[in-house]
Image 1 (tube, rainbow, N blue to C red):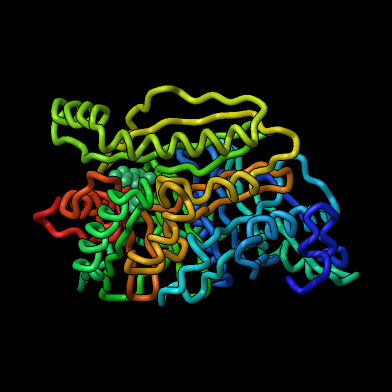
Image 2: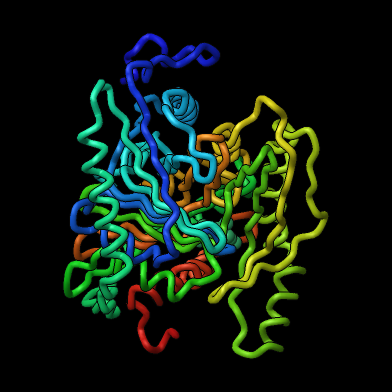
Length: 463
Ligand SMILES: C=C(O[C@@H]1C=C(C(=O)O)C=C[C@H]1O)C(=O)O
Ligand SMILES: [Mg+2]
């Protein structure tokens, strides 16, 4: 696809989709459970399902089947490539639907230049899907859209078949009982390369003291093995129940499923209004209200955590300044309290200039110093050198964009890759000059907790 002559000319029209037609049809239905719709799609669309719910729970999206898949093989240009392909595809939309726009859902890998051996076999560096069936829940209204993207002249029969299947999916989601989701049984829990992780923190701290970088985020992985294969819908159910105050996301790629419950927004764009989140600096929740407040105050006043946070504020402000006509960013961080952890949190908002789009922001923001470091390129190269794994989509942008250019991307942390009977969990932290291996190791345990709680890998003495 990328060898086509027009793919690299950024300002001219991308003609890769000029032979296609993008048919779409939306109906409004009575509200139903998004998870039930996801599950109903398991029969015909296993390995091709998507799930998204925003933090406020005002917007939920489920995608079933692949009407079209976008990928990009150019490492450096992948954001721009996906942006152009989507714009070009949207120009082929035959009939506009005012209520609900077609959605493109997917994600990017954290770092295409990381060549560490990896479990992420079915997740390319960019993987975006227009689903065949799109469930959209907005506030308390529900819509199902069908999308068909084709070069054929006659698509009448195909579209009719999709309508029939749509009605069956809606029916199944409305009447069939949700499977009874039991907590999976974990038979083995393995901390992957713990010792190397501890050493990498020591080395990276030395590198920072030698002023080769200011902040570098280092992560590690944990592997859970279940007694049985864990279905995607069950994994999603567990995580939605345990982490209500987060973005919920899930993306299937053949027999692998990447999912999570992240508190961190990378960027949202709605009618040229852009929102981002600086989230860095962490401390556990307290057992009592008093202890919780005390810990929160400690975090707000801790120089190490404040410096971790400030790198993120500076970088996101800079990116927003480049893309926005006006912007607002509070001077002091607040606390974001979620079930297992509290973070320093600074929201950022701005009004985009006419030429700037959601994908431009994703490209320039990823990775923020909350997941990469400062300076960006030095941090990425230190991560490649010292981190003992390949992040795949962990800590990377996952989200959606619609045909009007509105959408939202989260930073895919507090996440796991499900691979049949195994799940790989990921957690990291911002290393600065005064980090210690022991305290960073302890911080990763707090960040693993949401997933361990959901998937049942928590040992009883740790809860
Ligand atoms: C790296 C993670 O989280 C990030 C690192 C944080 C920190 O070091 O304090 C806090 C929030 C996230 O931006 C993770 O959850 O794996
Ligand atoms: Mg930290």
